[in-house]
Length: 274
Image 1 (tube, rainbow, N blue to C red):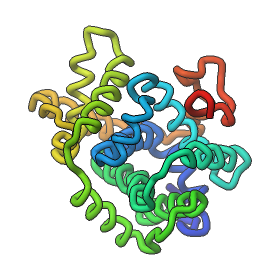
Image 2: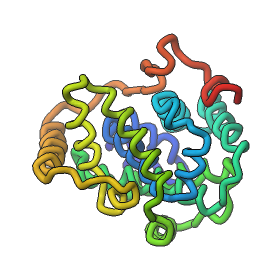
Image 3: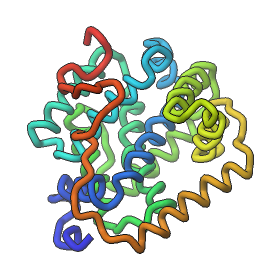
């Protein structure tokens, strides 16, 4: 946080995002980006494309790891670095196979800004500062420009307004939403021992708001589980406030991924044959 005060959120946004993702909130950033991606599946046009490819039904963990790797490469190393630039190029290659509307691209991009901000404000060990919020906005705005996305708002508040208005117009239940959501929930539950699968599923639903629950056609989690999950996240945040600040970067790009136990090369990230 001390370094951030000396940086400009527009000029130095790659450095600030690195500090947020690797030092200040590494766990929260990962969880909130998972939720951001999951949230986009409440849009029938988006879920229908994913359902049609079958990637989340057949290879949920691989699809998750591929997205995690590409996003982490850009956030941890910067989109202008050799590694981040290669990840951005690979992402554009993977997306080029599909016809995706500009508004859908804009919405997905916006969730990578505002879902993490809202998550950290609610469950982080502190709220984000204004320069950190603006840095996330400028970071993803520049990524969007390099993806060829048009009409990205120049203003933080205007882009947030677009996000909320888009959800009000496009969030609605359909079968493809439900099928993709069930596949993703099964993947998350599979990270835990079998006796805990039911609790893991309910815990994931506890992190969703009403719009997501309804968009996926899921049952509300038991109130006790929702209270337990919320309480545990806030207790974690309270404990972290008293711990020493992280002295070394936590880099997901240098860790292990379930789909790539021997490591990965960015050129081979993505569905088979791409």
